[in-house]
Image (cartoon, rainbow, N blue to C red):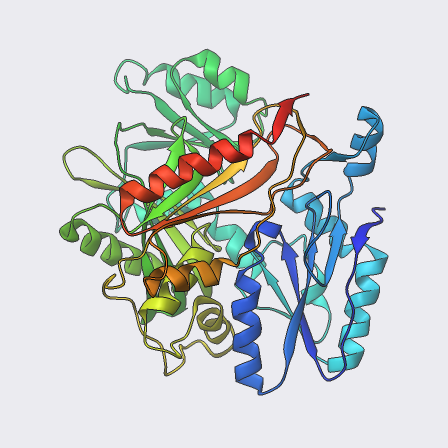
Length: 459
């Protein structure tokens, strides 16, 4: 049983709380939800964050840190260490933790109703089985079914432009099927497990050896598709309230490394307007399909655009996207004051199956807001030798840019701090670069990445 690694929450009188369960890098969305709930219920709301991130120190209020792997990892390396926990294991550990269970009971006794906010709804988080506990987000069983890449491809082929693909039942069939395709799919074969996100369980393969090195389980189902060389990986963020009400927040360009690994995004998209109209239309069709399947909440759609300007569907993420916080900050400074932000739209979508009256989509970027993000992860095990403190807020930085008080800005958030051994493939920090054109934000992004890299030394 995992103990609490860190806790500093304090309950204030006359305040209702919701729980955020997830990663620190999505912390900012909770502030938008807090404001929405305060407005909806006309009372003070706040939130307690339950995270797995191991930092040298925690500058955030109302935190609980649950990480079932960190103590053993630290003992192994003989010093304070930081490591990641698979999301499902983290959620299961949180659900079974007696300290968190006690907090949930205490909050239910105080306020009778408890909301939980998560980046992705997964069935390993079991508190919503309790009377009075509700997820501000899609139903976890529906989300899990819809996040199956195989289900997506077999369904979406009926109404979206698709790459050529095959379904393989087991590793043996995967190898036999790809053996017949190498001569025709000469640019590579994208191979993914049925459930995969962020490139963790997928590769762009160029030989049978690539597949054998990556995939071991003969019992799993695999999706394979023809890899199409391309320069553009647009992603569209939206919200589903019902089959007729699909909100499109905007389109960003993803940064993809090694053909399949998402590391960040940039806005606005550099695609021509004719393509953005098509992308929005495709995404509304996806939203209508999700609605028919019972999905309510925030979702994202990823595509590629080939050199001939043809759009191909890649995947649906029946959950929040990595662009959600930046789109909230963009919408806040572009839409009329008081317009509903994404967490408020999601609340109404989930609990009322509609959008509030003050819902407006962003039609243009007249404030000339440009941004780019990068999630900096360690490739190998490293030691952190210094800390990058961020003294500003992301919302404030966006507001200053929109009001033309700054021309550009580079912010580094959530640096884990100095004096830690950090496991490979761990989240180290997040860069957000702001500016008035794509060129300046890309330069800012590179500078931010170099600043983070300078805080580490190989272990």
